Image 1 (cartoon, helix red, strand yellow):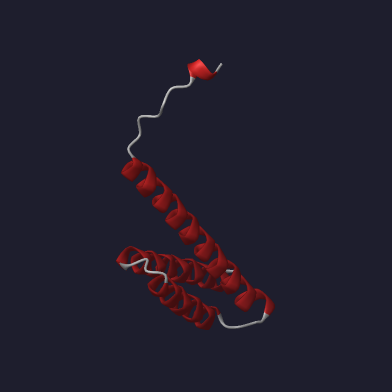
Image 2 (cartoon, one colour; image 1 turned 90 degrees about the vertical axis):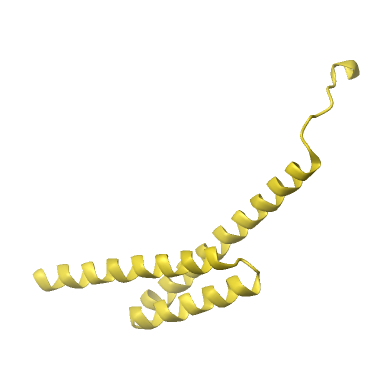
Amino acid sequence: MADDYTRGEMDIEAQKSMYVGTMKAGAWGAIITLLMLAYATFTLSMGMPWLVALVVCAGAGIVIGLGMGFGGAWIATIVALSGLAVFIQVLIILFQMAL
């Protein structure tokens, strides 16, 4: 049974970069989930206006991302998600006016 073992061929640097990338993707996902839950809590449970909650969550997201060293891609992601949230809220307002 032991003679069936074959030593892996993957380079250690490739393993390290894959591990670091996986951990960073996990951190990104966890923080984005935290920000989504905070936004929902602020708007639905606390009655905070949606734009104020969006600015608070986006600001917190940028500060957290810069503190964790995520760089410019993180800031672009937060700005894009904030733009998507504004677009959705504008659609909601327009549909409410139509009804």
